[in-house]
Image (cartoon, rainbow, N blue to C red; front, side, top):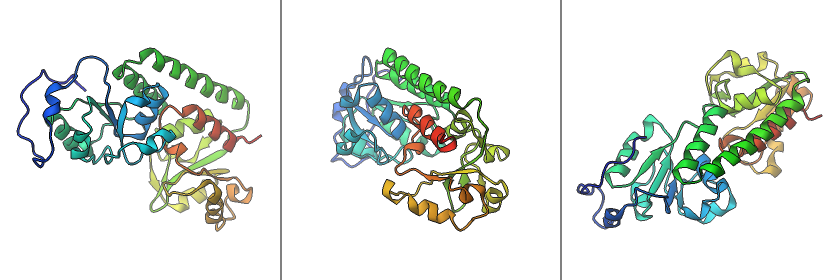
Length: 289
């Protein structure tokens, strides 16, 4: 996003008069931001991975890692941030992700005098995640730390790729949701992880990031591994419920061979600096040997 405009008088506030936006007459557009609001989990995780967690003063309702975010104020989501809540935190930087659905919210924050930066679409691919990490590190004055973080991620991902390079490539289904059935497509970061971990994504024929399809397609594709990364919340102790859900389809090779994996929590649904952990987890699912 372009740099914020030069200092100007603030327009009349579209919010209740009880909200005091006077502090933004002293906005710190120049220099390193000291009060940051993050509206996406991936950005939040990146900020903490870069060592600037103490500067984060507000996060989205979906941010759940690392554990330090539990005590931070929640300000909605990147699609629908609570404008008043963001303003009250007096941030000198708000970071969000691009989407046609949040354009009005971004403009409202900017009208209130806030600096808003939009980083790339992290869910598009691993390359996009890397670009997002690089962009965030520059925004917060941690460029070198960002490069070191990327080096660590690349090293771990390349290690996984090397370990499975000579192995067979089983058919893999990554299930994101059920009604309708949504799979991780070849253009998503999860599709990238399947390839890195030595699998063949049954959604490659469908194309895109998150293709919708029917159960018939999944069954006909004969997946040998099913990774249930559905957006339904369950604890690690309840992963057995995922196995029981798929047990109704004993003719699917993954079911017959007991290769159904459901990861408690949302690790696989958090595109960000934990790519190394995600690649290792996917490698273990696809090649447990």
